[in-house]
Image (cartoon, rainbow, N blue to C red; front, side, top):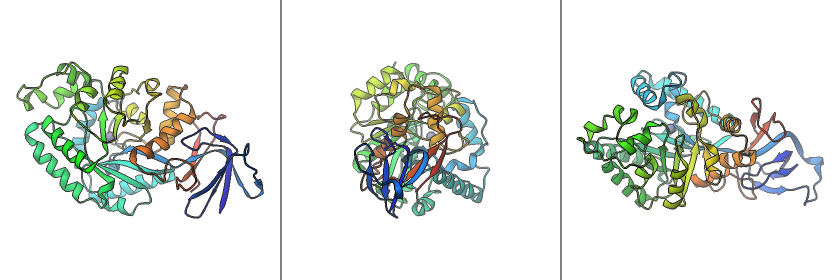
Length: 389
Ligand SMILES: [Zn+2]
């Protein structure tokens, strides 16, 4: 049995405990979590660390299969330019290059204290890897197709990828984004999701032209995807933002993660609150800076269930949840470290349904991270992470 302590322990789902002591076994199962203000503790056998301890991080949005695109795409292109660059580059790499990039990316996540990942996959290239991994994965098999005529073929392809996954309980078929899925495809995804009680994850309001796409049937994304032609000029603008226009087409969805939310407005959040009580909001601030040079208005989300993602190495220089929460903390210092760590641990585990992860509590195996180099309990540029278990 090992006993450890630090200046503060942030349990993930409750207030930090000054000099809290965690007792855990070889497997990392928590046997006790003690508070010196209440419990009698003999500190002689306790390993004491400088900094704070928190549970292992949950990365709720990544695309492991895109790791080979690290450093290949220019910054600040905005989303339509970014997608165009991916399409033009994606066939230029060998299987070996892709495999090696994926292996390095995963090791980077492990070193950065990430214990579980919600990972987007278009194909099966990551599946063998995930089956053997020490990271817990939920894989979202992403389907897109804004042309209604290809809905059946697109869905069939994603279904065959889904059927090849080693653990169906940890996989879902999910729509790519609000703007890239035709109504016909929405119906197929919805039926599959309800039947399998699937988690849903959608790229949401990542770029400004996503809202004008639905509001007015125009803008950079509408033109880039040639929606007028694909729908034989039958696209009907809703006069509403992307989120209510798109998500309103679904019924009875299970837990849903909305990823990015850079251009989400107060009215969208109010709409989501009425629409369902199982909506989670994922932020990937470093990817937003990379692609759009802009971040969400975090203060709008203080009462929402938020999570953190790294997105892929195509739009990020690293896969570190600590780096993501540093960026949020710099942009909006009113969001406390306790809140940021809840987003980065407990909320992510709750959304993905990993019951043993996300908080330091008796009987759980959350993994333990040490964050050091803070200014009191504030993250600074040099704050660093080390995995304890
Ligand atoms: Zn993404």
